[in-house]
Length: 435
Ligand SMILES: Cc1cc2nc3c(=O)[nH]c(=O)nc-3n(C[C@H](O)[C@H](O)[C@H](O)COP(=O)(O)OP(=O)(O)OC[C@H]3O[C@@H](n4cnc5c(N)ncnc54)[C@H](O)[C@@H]3O)c2cc1C
Figure (cartoon, rainbow, N blue to C red):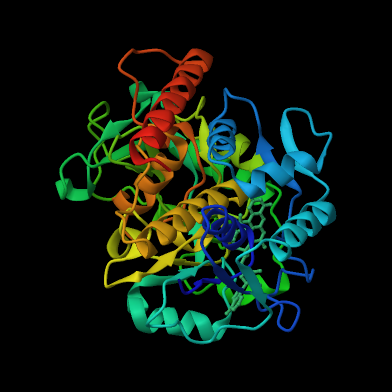
């Protein structure tokens, strides 16, 4: 059998290669380091952690912990080595980054069936099974190859992300449903602000602490929509004429147009999540919580994703990818990792794991597998394939992505039950699909 090609020796590429090799397949990993480095990578080793050394919580009451447990049950190399190289960090799984990457590099270098070629890939092979896992900072030449395949409108280069909150944490008594001028039915949930509330909010935005821009991010920042605090800084009324404009919206309680309105838009099919429209931001996370909870109706908002603005190469998965992570127009090509529209180290690893399994099955002439939606991995796949949000936006794992439970429970109990359901569905799926 010809080796499967894996482009990118990051978290997803290494996991995909491992999953293929442990099933007896052969792999050629192409990694451009150390000849070429992205703006964030620094080490010649594979599976480099470009920023924090924390892989987040291991608690089984946490969506991130559930994802880890699933990866463990699917024999993930990245997770196994992370546990071997862990450093103390409470209930989080943090690693000695150097040891972690070194160990993964050594394991893959010594693994039968795996060959690592240190070259930049500038063209996507047409006739070979390929897993593209070149990450959020995919090289320019490869990005333009992807663009040729997907169409420019289906490849994004940066994220300007608005925060997302859970539906159950919104105080609906202070909000009203309506679309501007009644166009689009009751699609938006509106949080009305009076004049005093609005100016207090603008003042808080101006005072809040922001994350400074890295040099390589500066050229991406203003290509699309501006961060909300940037607009606030331009004048105290700018937001009221921009994303917070109230025109065409009448509050049924006062029968009047509010002074300003923050609009919330449904984020997922399950309607368990809402995003704050136009609230892409570089505010520090704690500051986002403090300032955005000043919005009427959001006083107790539970944030499942914080806003951000950063360089990120990712494809328009809902339009062009199959749930098996194969490109619809070219099933020999699989995408893996952050480039599929997931966000985070473990989420990228999970998409590497699935692409590896499916690449191997495809080569063996077997049907690809798709994890059930009640599992964390399945919930991530469901997000990237079925997200109704246009333009598509990446997401980290969170409970809002899981289907609701039949029982109406909240808090800790809900999280534990979701975890239990995830293991059950995962084990049944493993059994059924013999993976
Ligand atoms: C600056 C930054 C900071 C981040 N911080 C965090 C964080 O703290 N926590 C978190 O959970 N997530 C973070 N992320 C998001 C994400 O989880 C990581 O980027 C993660 O490493 C993605 O995994 P990946 O395997 O998809 O890509 P990567 O780990 O980036 O791997 C891609 C690999 O492909 C190689 N490559 C690229 N182009 C080519 C080519 N043409 N030919 C050959 N090789 C190529 C790269 O050199 C790299 O080794 C961050 C992202 C960025 C950009």
